[in-house]
Image 1 (cartoon, rainbow, N blue to C red):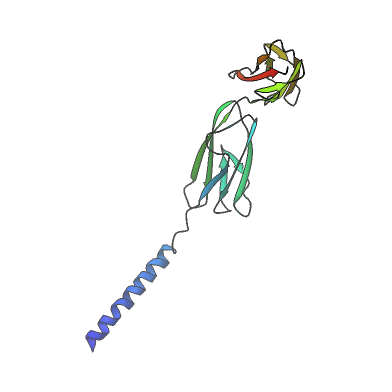
Image 2 (cartoon, rainbow, N blue to C red; image 1 turned 180 degrees about the vertical axis):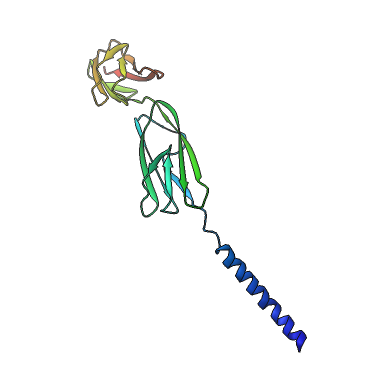
Length: 195
């Protein structure tokens, strides 16, 4: 009878010991905070002067810093922060920290480049009018734009437009945008004069 009671008591004693150990340790450790960047994508390229970094953190009480600037965290854990973006590649560091845990960090690179768009005429198009109107936009109004080697005026919104005479049946129009500190950007548009 005594042997039976000793065997039955072993798991009871172990359960008490384990329970005391859990109490002494303050319970299981809280889950580690998770951090996800939703925008922009790493290695993204843009012509914009600003970039908005958005993401979500698993604990809304976390402190989120983006390149040392603190971002407001909403009740659902989402955050957003807009920062200036110089030309070239910018390394963006996003860190989330919860009390009692080491910070978790995500990094991404975003590159700002001059962007040039020629809206008219369309490439490889046949045009009836002569001269033809060459129009488009450049991402930075401070840039200089040249159409067939001649500088054209750039409006405050980055748009430009000029009339270009067509002297040949087929003409390749070169449009170039230049901005100090960046590489020149060129686009070729081929047009055929209607007979």
